Image (cartoon, rainbow, N blue to C red; front, side):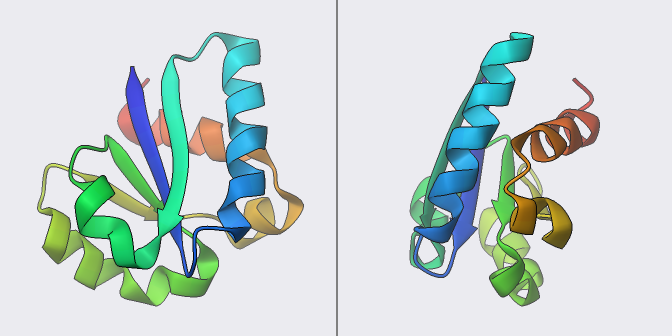
Length: 101
């Protein structure tokens, strides 16, 4: 099971996207845990993730987050268009590409 952790300013705006991602993942049989958290919780919840996805509003923190989590965790910014459209399919497909699934 893949662990996909989304982070944004407060963890709320990504919650809608999480539901869309879960729905799409279930429809294709992709075994994953998807959840959303506040940026302030990145060290607490990000270290055991397979991939950390950042909301567009905090993508400027990418280098800081990579440094905090180390090289074992992939860190990506969510595409602004996919985020704006709450396109769970596009985000899951990007995750699969990055992780080689």
